Amino acid sequence: MPSAPDAGGSPQHPDEVPSPTAAPELSQEGVDGHVEAALAAIGGAGDLDELKEARLAHAGDRSPLALANRAIGALPGPEKAAAGKLVGQARGRVNQALARRQQELEAERDERILVEEAMDLTVAPGRRPLGRRHVLTVTAERMADAMVALGWEVAEGPQVEAEWFNFDALNFDKDHPARQMQDTFFVDPAKAGLVLRTHTSPVQARSLLDRGVPLYVAVPGKTFRTDELDATHTPVFHQLEGLAIDEGLTMAHLKGTLDRLAEAMFGPGTVSRLRPAYFPFTEPSAEMDFRCFVCRGEATAPPCRTCGGTGWIEWGGCGMVNHNVLRACGVDPERYQGFAFGMGVERTAMFRHGIADMRELIEGDVRFNAQFGMEI
Ligand code: DAH
Image (cartoon, rainbow, N blue to C red; front, top):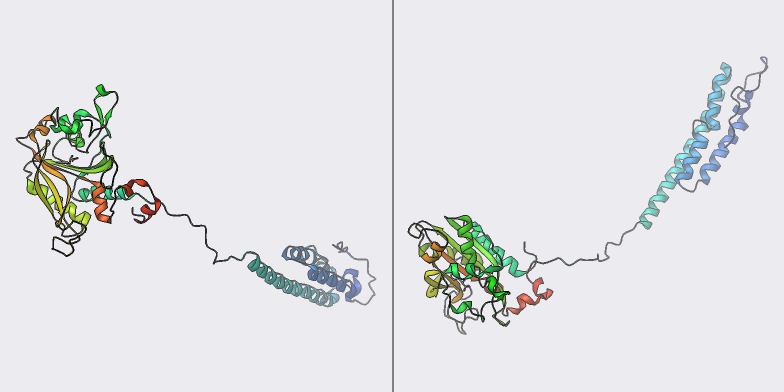
């Protein structure tokens, strides 16, 4: 950077004719020299940073032209105009050159950014496959949700259960066949009296003892039986239990509740039907079916493949809660009555989704799960 000229200048003879050249830094040559130096620096700036430096050196407050401009003030009056014009024009040229170069360099930069930061919008992004919830989880939740929509609560119980809850409280005789080894997983040591629960019904007794009456609970959960795995059996499966205890409940309430649940799972108009059966914990007891949602009971040829032409699909068991169960849980059967039901979640999911083989539900093949999408 050229050093700042001495603003005081050399002493002038008072008789000399005033002229812009009177002070050396304000001479035509001197000013031209500053302009040339400035234009060279501006033209030589290769990027915006370098141009910034050139601006500071040649157009900044301490640049030779700025100092020359300041020196004008010290000139005798008549010389001021010519010197002002000379320096003003010089600064104008420099500023114009700066502006022009600024534009050029900005345009260059913008173009470079377009190239350097270009994105290929056609490149396939690294896709992460979406996780999926298992169809059994979703089905069990939907069943419980349908009950919650009727105003029921959801209850849960332990999978390792006391024999007393699994059998005794539910009025199973000591020698009931379901207690035998072929059905029940007993937990060591035998004297601890623990089993893997064979159904969700023990949560009936647990809920009655915990929550008291009136009571409306739905119990989705995992259950265990010593079955071989095949297309229609699995040793680990799921049930949804329902229990309602209140004053004045009848089988009509049971039937209406099952109809609502059947509709929620298989579509509007799907009704249930009850057939006489036996369970130790209900009296009377019934097996329940739901209307085949494919043929709706209309005879077809060939016979409907979903229900085998019967028009009904077996769903589970139900009945009016046996007074012995109420008494075992400290509830007065003279005042409170109730109904209960239990059905398989696997079976419900299989019919809802047309799954032919139960093994598909537990093998964990992602291609199977992927079919059901991401249902929350
Ligand atoms: N617990 C029975 C089973 O696993 C199903 C069942 C039948 C549940 C009748 C009930 C009921 O609540 O009332 O086979």
